Length: 437
Image 1 (cartoon, rainbow, N blue to C red):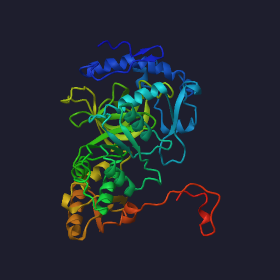
Image 2 (cartoon, rainbow, N blue to C red):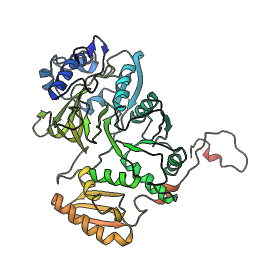
Image 3 (cartoon, rainbow, N blue to C red):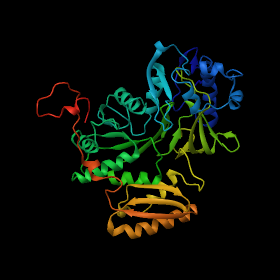
Image 4 (spheres, rainbow, N blue to C red):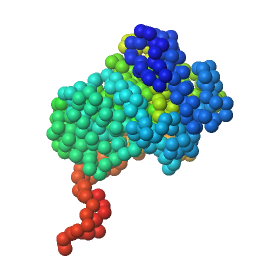
């Protein structure tokens, strides 16, 4: 297919899988789309203010300074805006721990791209699906993208925002069961919390939810061992996506279960902070240049996630790089959340370990796991040995009774959700007038 018409002025035609047949063809798709992305960036106040102007070619782009999260925070709220505000469809802020807002925004055309990428999900979405969305809605992008994508394919959406008091874990389990939910969208950890809540409600995750056909997950590292454990508990596939509020979806699974970067929609680089060098493969921190953003173009955006990227042939034939997401940071001992999680979930399934936490300390790493009394001694011994063998650090493992890290009350509570009121009867508690619980 001709790949010379992805941008015609401000009009875009989004690439489709099959427009290219190999990595050389993929590079041609990127090269054709890049001039439109650079032209959009040239209208951004942030990039216009940078010394040297906006790069004009791919070669110039490779030497252009990285765009950091700090740059986005400094540009709050509309310093990155490249279109008139009347063209915006939505405004978002990403979740973060810095305390300073990171703003991002999208036009309706940008939303066409966001939805199209999400709908590449390998299990498909259609009118027969009841889709429970359990990622955040408020300000973040993730819940809104899934919601819009499911609606665009005719599915019934259940908007069970995970930051809302109105949908505690016990209610989610009820919705999954009573509404015959077929697909869910959540953090991987949520799938484990639902399983624990279902068991407390007397339900078996792998038998009492027969309509469920897949769990779609994103938002945190997912090791192969934890993925396999979740799939075994629920008896359905676990399908991973990867993205960010600032960029939308960046990777999704092919029919063979491999996570591929959407490199027809963005140019990806792997950055080594020690040397400042980048490449298109290997391990390092991810850098992204979206190719079809109009509201908020980004050039060499340094997301900072640790990744491993490979350009290898896959039976799917997509000719897209594969990626393994390792998390946001590691430690001096080489520990990452994804790596340590892999070791934890290699413990025998009969131990029932679902919840854990760890922290580095002077002697190595301290790990706590929830595990029933009959398996505590074995779990402690096996996990400590596995961590020390894998990372060559001392590990102190503590076995905690189930319900310690994740209290049963958290999984069974059904708090009242109130509306603000001004008028009360004499025996009502009017101190709750402006509270929602």
